[in-house]
Amino acid sequence: MTNPKQDPDPSVPKAVVSRLSLYLRELQQMLRVGRKTISSSKLGSRLGVTDAQVRKDFAYFGQFGYPGIGYRCEELVGEIRQILGTDHTWPAALIGCGNLGQALLGYRGFGRQGFQVELAFDISPEIVGRSFEGLRVDHLDQMPRLVQEKQIRLAILAVPARAANEAVERLIQAGITGILNFAPVTLILPKSVSVVGVDLAMELEQLAFAVAQQTNSSK
Image (cartoon, rainbow, N blue to C red; front, side, top):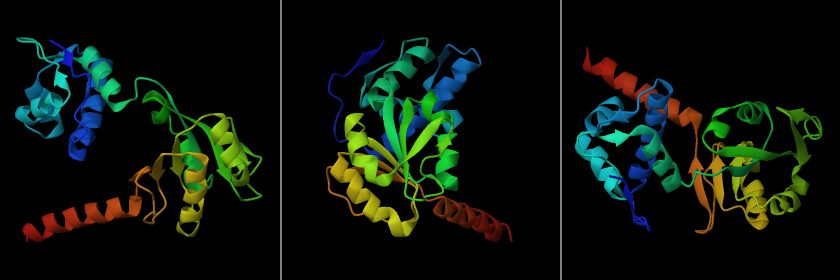
């Protein structure tokens, strides 16, 4: 039966947290096709991990399975979202509204997973004052005041590398404590601020390496 821990282990490995997101996506897909339950072996096989790994990952947070049934998909989705902190909507601010920023504003996945971009900022005269996806872009100078007014703690950084660290300094001063970084640069941050980097070119490099290795091994 479901028996979540009241205080999750603060030393949970990052790899486990990453897999929680993968489990969540798979369970949500199961619900969309009408699946109500799933076993640890089937959940693991769909994601390339063992059933033992699935059970071990969930054990960090409690016991969620039912003997003879496995996991109830809808119930487990709720538990994982609670663990991840996405059982409520997180408002976020977007810094940088060029091509990438505009694409991010149009990404519907944020809303489905509990995130809502409520503020958007830029410094370009051609962009400030315009609206994208129904959201008006304000000048970056207005960011500290507006972020504090809306009590926003998460920011998405989609600026050029040369502007990233200056923008981050402003975000920290405004009280932002979590940053999703799309800028291709390493950020200098205090320990009180968490960051997740998304470097699309780096991901392609890793993919190219994997394909090259496969090609070399087949020769």
